[in-house]
Length: 294
Ligand SMILES: [Zn+2]
Picture 1: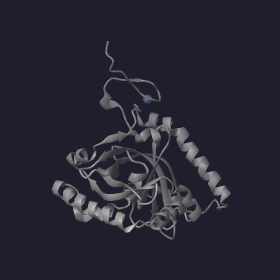
Picture 2: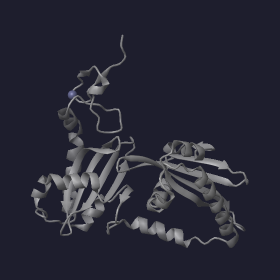
Picture 3: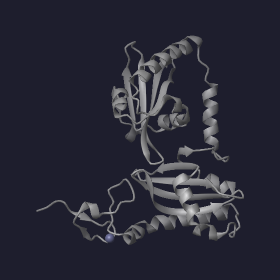
Picture 4: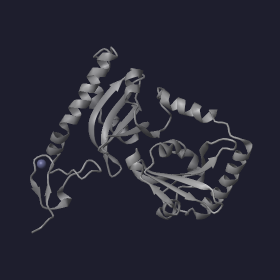
């Protein structure tokens, strides 16, 4: 008996070869046809539409706010799908991912769409809307920020609070000195190990937004002690930028604040990489099960 059994998730028809299954997410849900994909995701689409109606009502936005003909503009749609200025991702408790693309168009209007991704590319669009209303825009600016080309104005207040928090922490001079020393040591070592084909050092600054994203929700977290006996916590997360996978690594020093019971986690180095060897070098120590705790 063959256990290589594949069925369409909607109509349950048998599909003999896995190559014939259609996927629109990273999950194992496969389909026999476009029609079955749409039928399966219909309840999702209806939910997103109902949500929009409710939010528009609560914000008192007039129904004819934007010209519906804009949705027929295929070029515009593709621009938002493949070149959005802001891309966010939200995961539910089943680890299903919903990506939100936000793109300014003209006359103060924003095109917003929610879609799934498969193999690093937008795959199935659940929902789209266009609005001039900044509160409606704000409603959709949820989830982890993956791409932000120019930083769209109505960013959430939470992010501003985070920044304030970082500035408020003042550290004793001896700790700052210790971290600075560590930084130059670790950076020299990283530059030594970096492969020529990896993301260039000069471009690291373009990836600074990924520090917070990695620390907030890492895929992996490792605790170890370095040669100097210092506690090192390493956080790693995989991202996609324009369809290409890369790791973001943040190495932190877990340091005791003198004359206090407190410890602080201070970033020593952080960098993007596409090099599996480099990943292996930094993914060492006691692995914390981050997926469960989050
Ligand atoms: Zn089917």
